[in-house]
Length: 340
Image (cartoon, rainbow, N blue to C red; front, side, top):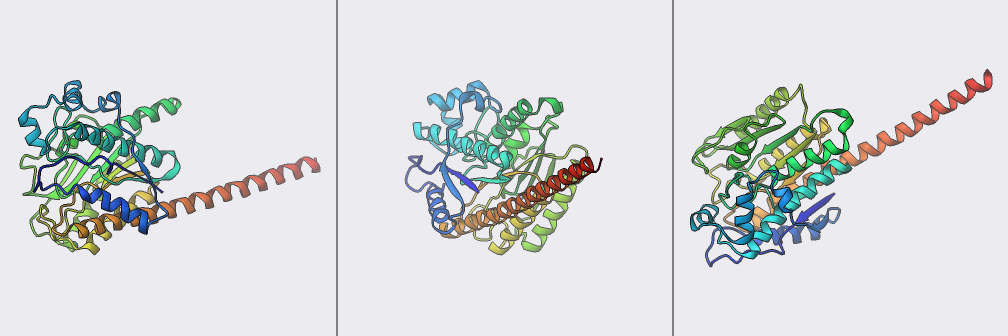
């Protein structure tokens, strides 16, 4: 399994800033130390053309050249800098690379950051500058269409957003796009205060714990599969936020670490049963103890690795069965010719 990182591009944030920038480096180090079966690679930057698949030219230029207004910077929560612009491009590039790898046969791949679901086509918001999933989804659809023109159909995409905050930017970008199904399971009273309409929104009350959350997830996934049955998705983006955890500063829900792990298992299992490749993004996580957030996200990646290993084993078994079947068919054909 392969995972892409962007932690070399650290934003110069003012002292006391609430964004836990160091978690990305800590997560990469934990993966390299404890999960050696995951190959870690630095993400490439997304190009202007790639960003333009989901963002307006004006917004791309504003971020690239430092032309954002003070109000736009405040809405994002980051001051503009060259590193901010570069990190934002690389965060998108990491999800593009993960989605491309998942579609190319990996089945499961990851972005060790990403999940910037509050970014709209024309602006950023809530620590999100560009919307990595939106750009990657549209780029994968374009690349898939070029490779499969003879099929005369689009690559369908499902976004499973389990960050504690609603994916408002993603919902807005895909509001009129039936080829992308957006599912968001989030805190009802949490940010953003003005929600957008996803294809399926599940709003949860403050204090929601493991049992209620997992029951809501099961129902939501069943609904999503039913509503996409006529045109099943061929690619998934999974935003595996750590911020529903009971110790998260911004979460307001009460999931345990074991509850979050069970959430991940159910998502990976549902996608594997349907043979849907998945690009996983870490999304939010603002634990009072940063080590707890990193441990939750590392566990998500461990479960992603288990899913990848199971998929690879299944693919190898099927390949062997195909070879054996072909050999038997060829042998039978030869005998028939000899008998004739």
